Amino acid sequence: MAAKSQPNIPKAKSLDGVTNDRTASQGQWGRAWEVDWFSLASVIFLLLFAPFIVYYFIMACDQYSCALTGPVVDIVTGHARLSDIWAKTPPITRKAAQLYTLWVTFQ
Image (cartoon, rainbow, N blue to C red; front, top):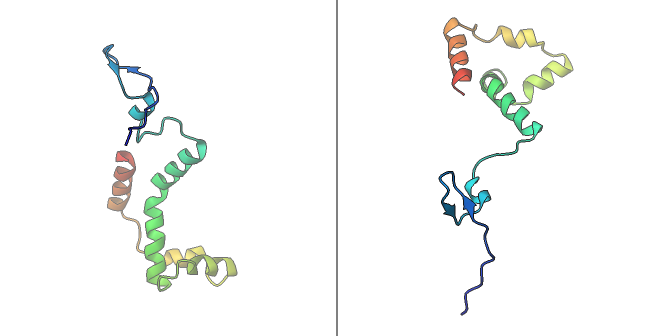
């Protein structure tokens, strides 16, 4: 079998002036060099609200037998108010606020 000929790959110069046979796109693997606004907003949303999302899942499992739509349906239909659901949760402590702040800081 004959080997397929490879197209000429442009040589990229490194910072020290030595040419490299890899293309510039190969050097960018795994990096998001151009990020759209939706991706950026999604990442920021997850960064800020991940602990609250976890809280929602724990609260739904504790108070609604793991029915994830249960709290939303109850609030929309008027069977429960947000204050009723919040009243059943343990209070936020200083330690919890510190841990949340530390988590966001190091993210």
